[in-house]
Image (tube, rainbow, N blue to C red; front, side, top):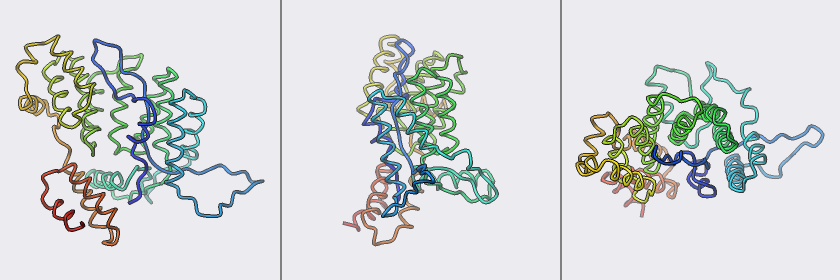
Length: 330
């Protein structure tokens, strides 16, 4: 199954990104870092045609570009990083949707299948075309670079372009929420909350789900909804138990609202979020899509099949069918 570097791996090379949203009491969240996706077209001159001795693997090339731009951002070499990010989006303006298909640059087959389901639900009949070029990630990196260059308006515009090219990436909506918080002209809290809620809908891993809950917790504090905020942080720890950000926010609420803290435990937190129509678990559709991918893999691709089933089990640890399928592969 073709897949680009998980953004979390790219992020590990750099600083924590936009999504580290803190409480309104302290400084605003610190700067961005970086996530993943596809391949790019290199600009060869007519005078010197580039003829590779072997076919270029677009995913490998794309991953190399993402690692390089992450390293440049980490080193503070923002002009170099911007140049690479611009190469990643090269030619995007010439690519348009048509009756022949909706063109998007997904990070994985999961994203493509999820988008196909969304389009079918909304009544669209056009086929979905997965363009393996890192346009979405290029705009994502440009948003990071703009933010570090103290251009929050441009950063928000670029993260929105990233979403346009890959509307299934939870991380993009998490970062959009962060960038909305950090605009010079205030954005309505309802719009910021909507971005985090969309991230919760799309999150297909525990880390993204927890990050979206933490972002929503920030919004609840801004709305003076201390119970909702505490509930978000408590439930987020179920998905990301090591999060120091969530623990600090819980301590912040404990200090400022001791009665709220005393009256809310894990079970009550889930009920509090249910009342606010906030998801408390990863959408089962992601497990369905993973199992669909597993069913389409040839039996000979044992390692790929194991990887897909293990990821499905991570999202649904009590699923006996997945456990049996994995056991049969050993």
